[in-house]
Image (cartoon, rainbow over all chains, first blue to last red; front, side, top):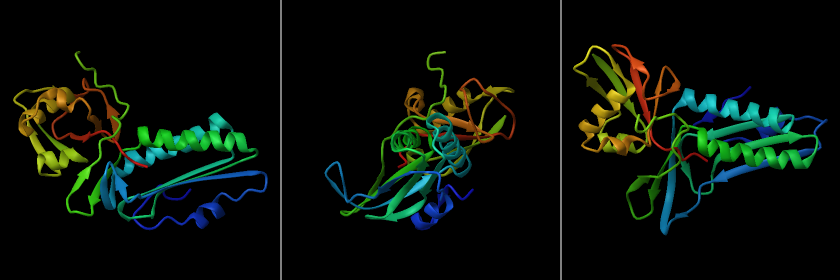
Length: 147
Length: 82
């Protein structure tokens, strides 16, 4: 099993080689890339920060879930950390399964769960200077408000 | 008792630091007590930290989780990976 977080460019070919499987008739890949605009501001790049151990645990759990729940044969998720340039991949998800339906469902599940559960934060850097952490999704953790 | 708090995401900016020592004038405390103390230190209302999850020993924990002297509490604001 390879790394789930890395500070260097994600190598899609390596992930494809790692999951190569002739019994899979479907290969689905999601690549999230850094966009040059967000809410009207020109973006120059994004720094991704993660809690390494918790984020790795979350990504591994999502991979296992994809395999168990959708009966795909392989799910691999790699997320970038550090400064990611415009157009560069921030996250890559590779699914291999016998048939396409399961591959598409598992792929969608994996990216949505990652956005909800992985302790990763996006610090946007703007072309006109300055930067800001983006608002996000509260981690699923009981906070017992009002108790 | 004293615990260490580590900030992530925008909380680092709010705190102007990556971590802080938090002193609590009680013998036993929970994560909730630490979050309340952190809110005081940061000058925000405690409910403004409701969006932050807490982790101890690499596990997400409830606010009622008891703490021991020297524990490390990580405060994890809403996430935005992808």
